[in-house]
Length: 91
Image 1 (cartoon, rainbow, N blue to C red):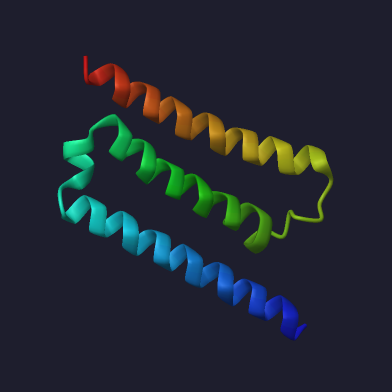
Image 2: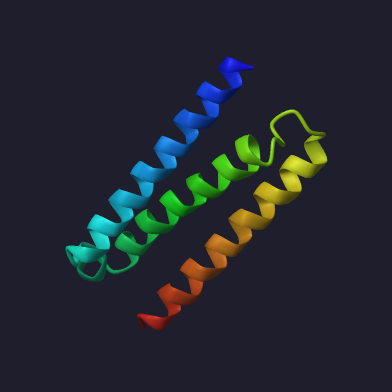
């Protein structure tokens, strides 16, 4: 049980760090200057945070593969569609 709590604590700290990095990049103006590359980095961090939520906090790491693949696929699709829309808006 303690091992599971340690994993969840580390996952939470990693998500907190990713949020801080995202905030710092946006606040410093780097994302706006880097345009699509900056947004891709921000959404890559968001995708990783979503993956942690799915696997660790929703405890789907040991669930049937179909559930894991469906949720990770949906997360990936949403992130890619948002990046596509942003990329098209730059034209």
